[in-house]
Length: 431
Image (cartoon, rainbow, N blue to C red; front, side, top):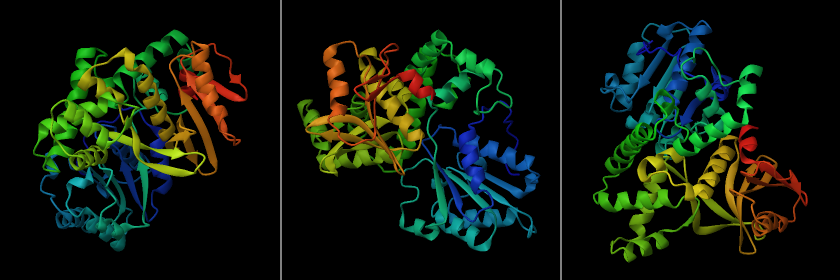
């Protein structure tokens, strides 16, 4: 197997991703892992290789190409890729073969080679990419209907706890049902709440667990990742000339997590700061940042009119730790941070998430998948009657029978009020 010398015994296994991939192994579909850089796609691939070998697949029948490694710098386009794979598997005609390609968007016209791998039966294909438009090009029609997309997210809080518990002793540990002994530790309230504060501050990128949990160390690490993504995936790729305006836009978006954001509003803010730019430029820059998978824009949905509202999305970060690496951690922003965490948790559970609007009142989240729907309000504290009336009253305006829930950091608030559920945020994340 090419480039197979890395030891994976110290990795914590994110079993839910591996299980999804394995369900499609040896099926005639391309397995596509999509997620921002440093979210753990490479580790998932390497652990998949371990599982294939444990199933009896010879290492020589597995080709792993990591485009972040200079070892594969010569593979520039689809011709190079097809030739490289063909040479690697020369003479192997009947055995099962596997082709895994990491950060495939770095290979020009990669879809042509992958389509040919499928047509020629060269091998089972697993690819990863850190661009939201990975499968949106015209070339992607070459594999249309023959791929399954598997989004890879930063660690959920449950996964974060698993990484923390296994730090320094991670051999063979999987993110499966936790043993009674470890679960007992997780149930220790003080321990769990301390770790939640770490999660709120440092986010969910797996790499932070290889470093001391120290503000200076981790914020420098996170800022280096952010700069790499912004420079490599945005500024260089899209040939952005005015990097200063772009930098100010990134800071603005990161500073307004959970707020309604429009290009017009941003342009007006910049004008008030004597910064000249156009609405079109801002729209383009936001689309580039979103394509790099640093941010998500959640659309707003009119619950009564049953239609999406245009030009007034909310921005959430794929990892809140990156925000704090850039602008620092501020406790006064906790409401927006908690919203961001719940938004990503719902996504990780497979929900499509939008922002609800009813009678000019906002519902934090509408979460939908298949025939399931739920409405979720998020706040830090239900510490006053006014806040209680607002959070529960907003949900009471929705007259359908889907589940409605308020999530907050109040441990001892009743579990139900007027038919609307309440969940302590940490309990909700641990479900």
